[in-house]
Image 1 (cartoon, rainbow, N blue to C red):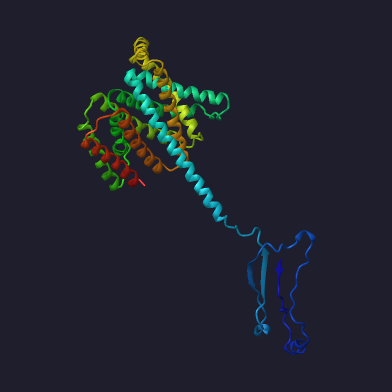
Image 2: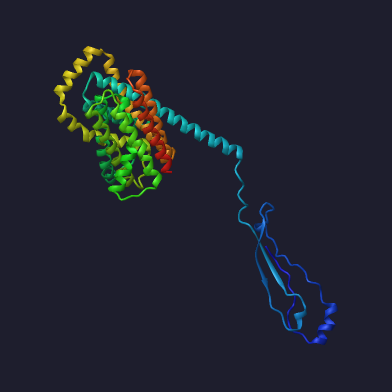
Length: 389
């Protein structure tokens, strides 16, 4: 809408100007006609678009300058703030969702470690045990995709190429951790695996050339010191178990590095991403498991386990395989909802729950010095998470 105030600015003789001055009409506001199509809404504010100053002749310099003000309807009203109460409910629901993810993640991980250790005590074949875990998870996801319980991921050849180095590192880390738990207590394996941040920083620094703030380097001291103290004071120390946990740490660090590099721009959900990772890891692991242990050894070991444990042994194998896939799947789903920092803190707390529960269930003897080393290592992991923020 244009609102204008106009004065005549034509030049006149001074005498004629005096005669016409008294008869000159007062300035009026002129409004353009409003058609039916251009109805002004009272709900929309009027915004001043410009203010223009017009020139005038020398005779009319004594008058006030002519000013034209232009106004227009705002296209849209200003956004209205969302209801505060609704925002609070939404934030509370998100926190509840994350809490459920974390509790489920920790509970499934504890159950997996318990059944995995039971299976390995009766059936000391970690390569086959690792293969069964991946095979069960892969079968579960293939059935879910076939029945359309879960939406199948849209992948291409480039996706699988980028996933291959991630799957290789994941396979090595999974097998190494299983080998470790077949030789030592679950608590000891997880104490050593709590030193994974130290491997992450060292690999990133010396192989990738990344630098970190000083607090990050300082947080490695309690991690390394705590793990060393726990290892030295471990009553059931075994070199193969110790090296398996160390190799698992290194492999999972490379898995994370390859994952960050190869999966940029990929629109695959956390659940489907881990499912594809399991399938490819299964393809990689199977021939190595056959070469290292072999069907003949598996058959003899299976018969011995059934004779000692009974039918419950089959349930143990099924449980450790299913819970392995579920806890990893939930962890990847959690990563979709939270920041990497929160995820790393949750991973630290997960190790505490596993260590404590395994000590209670398997009656693992723990010396005070050993417990102190574990506490220092876990504290260092927490400080590392904070320093990386």
